Image 1: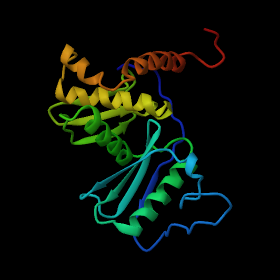
Image 2 (image 1 turned 120 degrees about the horizontal axis):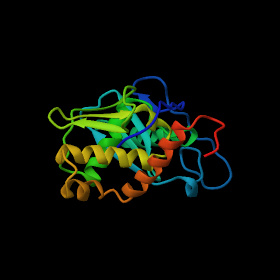
Image 3 (image 1 turned 90 degrees about the vertical axis):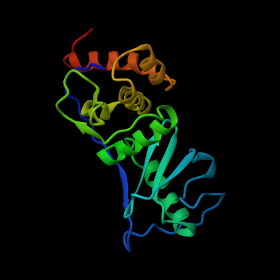
Image 4 (image 1 turned 180 degrees about the vertical axis):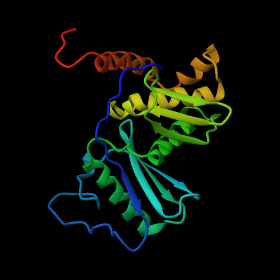
Length: 212
């Protein structure tokens, strides 16, 4: 995928360190049925909870399409798990723009997308880079490294996910063969994302105040 000139938007992420502090706040009793996170039940989006044996001291949460993905250490269970999930979901709902800032959050998105759309993909790292002026993303099949342009921090979540799936598919098929496109297009908005990025790149290249 190709692109235009550098573009950066301030971002936030929810990365919650496990330990004695900070402690998730206790819910406030108000009229009407509310979740433990303090938000109305009807307003809470779908939440997908994933656990990781490799993750020991941190938990994270981020948007994926219209759902919130929460990733927890496998040892967190019971009431502590429920309270931590509610806390992370509340933090993500309160943050704008949506959570995507760190390489760690980016790798968690890749894990969710690979399981759903590219189960054969194996990678060693997924990270943001600032030296890709002509591409939205790239990967090295031999080492399993995936790199995304920092300009993608300003795009909608579904566009970011489409680029991640595109690069994950290249780890299975390094070329642009029919097999590659069949795999990448398992993400349902892949073609729509390409159209969006074409327009987004044009917007980055046109000086402010110019009429196109």
